[in-house]
Structures are given as structure tokens and as C-alpha cells.
Length: 297
Image 1 (spheres, rainbow, N blue to C red):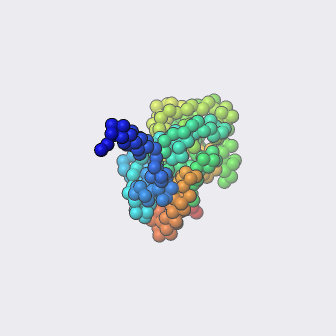
Image 2 (image 1 turned 90 degrees about the horizontal axis):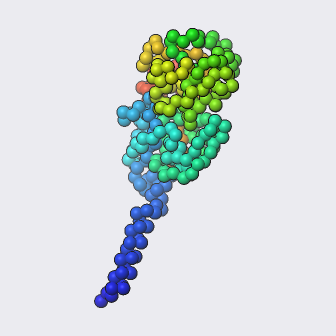
Image 3 (image 1 turned 180 degrees about the horizontal axis):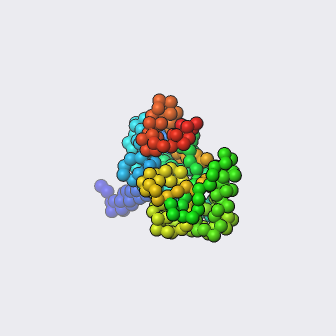
């Protein structure tokens, strides 16, 4: 026979078990390394809609690659949409801010994904908190203006450093649109030091060209893939003044606590590179880019 005290004790114990089960992450099920993903049966792809890497319509170069990767692991693919200012925190659990000079960790945030794939450039401050795959794409930061701008494109010299200095020499007195917490942060390229006035855009990376059309600034920083897409989408409305960076590399990003996932992806990417799968997808989403970087692709 169970006493009232005994019933209360059983009830209290049940409540404690429920609280622990509901609020406390159990074992590996909340982790984002390979064994956690396999146990969960799903890989969560963190993606920011950007150019043709993640179109926002269910496809894109990185979306297709992540779906193929999920299939190779024998798990289900899940897309987790995010934005640039929080994507690193969604992967690492650490809210980070880059102020143009140093990386600052502001606190803990929930982890919502296992892998970042959306054309992320391997700029130095990101390497402090993320691991990256082998480079998957070559890119460059360009200065872009409207077709009716008085600025004229530079004549390439064959020396990238001279070309960058030539572009910077044109900027005094102009306003230059950039995007904080991304590879379009003006401080990364010394825009203020040129005598230009940086203008921080508060929209999405895909909206830089439309913002320029609305005269949000005289010129804008644009990543090569996005600029290529914009020039194709709005022919005759934009012109490239010249480069503001050497060639940079994009890659897939991992938490530093996911070494096994990173190793599995490297093996998968090497197979896709060897059998032509990756080049086929690049040509599908960026037809002109292999011709721009023939040595890379």
C-alpha cells in the first residue's frame, strides 16, 4: 500500500525527471560533431541567402553540395536559415562581433546548426573562431559604381597591389557602402583612410546593388560572386572600378569542436572535385567564374 507521503515522493521524482529531460541537453544529441549528427539522423545546414550559393528558393551551389553531403553520411538534410550577424553564433554557441579591428565574444547563444555553407570568405578574424574546409571558391572584393558615375574603371597593371592603390586613390570625397560583420566591412580595406566616407548598410548582402540603385552611397564594396550575379541581372547599370583586395577564398565553415565532421566533409569534397561533381555545380550556378579563375577550378 502506497502512503500519501510515498505518492508525493514519487510525484516529486517524476517532476524532476521531466524537468531534466525537457530542459537539459542529454548526451550527444545536442552536439554538432559527426557522431552527434549520425545519432540524430539529420545534418543542419546553416545558410544565409547570398548570391547563388544559397538562393533562398531551395537551391544554390552550397545547398546542393550539402544535400549530397547529407546523402553520403546517410542522414537527412535540414536547411536552417540565418543572417550574417548571427550565423557564427548559431554554429559555435558564441555571440561574436568584429569591430573592424578585433573579434569580441559577447556571450553564449543557442546552437542551431552543424555546418555553415553560404559562400563564406575565410577572412582572418573568422579563422579565430571557426575551422574551414579546403577552399571551395575564389573571390575578390571589388569597388562597384553605377554606370553613370564619373568614376572610370582603372586600367589593370598586372600588379594587384598597384591596382588596389589605384582604386583607393579615386575614393576621396565619395561615400562607400559596406556591410558590417561580413567580408564587406569597410575597415578591412582601409576605406576611411582613403578620404572616403564609409556608409554602413543595414540590409542583406544580396541587397547591396539595389541599395546602390537607390543612391544609398556613391560606390559600394561587392564580393565577386554577388557582383557577377548583379551585372548579369541588371545589364548596363553597374560598372566595376577595380579591386580592393587580392584574391580571397571561400570555404565551408565548422565549429572547432567538430573535427570528425570536418574530416568527413574533406573526404566528400575531394571525391566531388575528382569526379567532376563540384565543377558541374559551379558551372550551373556561376557559368562565367571558372573562366575568371581557370587555375583554381
